[in-house]
Image (cartoon, rainbow, N blue to C red; front, side):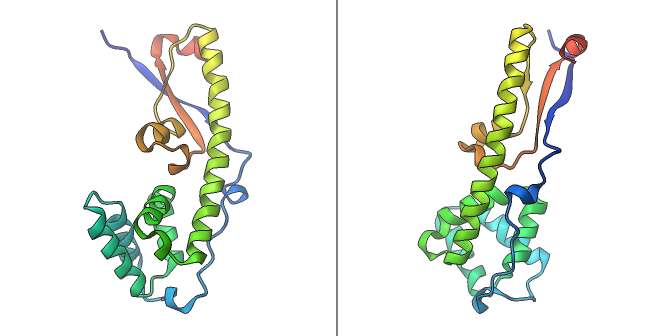
Length: 178
């Protein structure tokens, strides 16, 4: 047997603007970390290198090399945000470089992580209410992404930014779920 499933976005945070929780990333003023010559492809390569499955030692060496070439942090953040991996990238960068990470960047990472955790905690609280309503009505529900994916896949709800939650429900029970 199989179920015909309908994918439904059950939560959408329309009243919360990303900037309310996420600090803007201003260019780092320290001369060693500003370079207008770094392009989007270079920033993407830096992000891809950090997030690859290569051994940590080789990723650490490559990450240090990017910092030594005067990386434009604003472009890197824009690229990571565009590819929707900014929280995971920040976490990985901290793991790779630890105390070698410049304090200004470390502070930005911490502030961003705090914002993602706050936002995702709100989403999880709302999801809990939806799950209770479905369980109370005896309706099956499968959460397909969002903070549940972050917790399951990465072990931390703050490693994937979420503004909505999608669930799958059997098509023949869609009217009851509405």
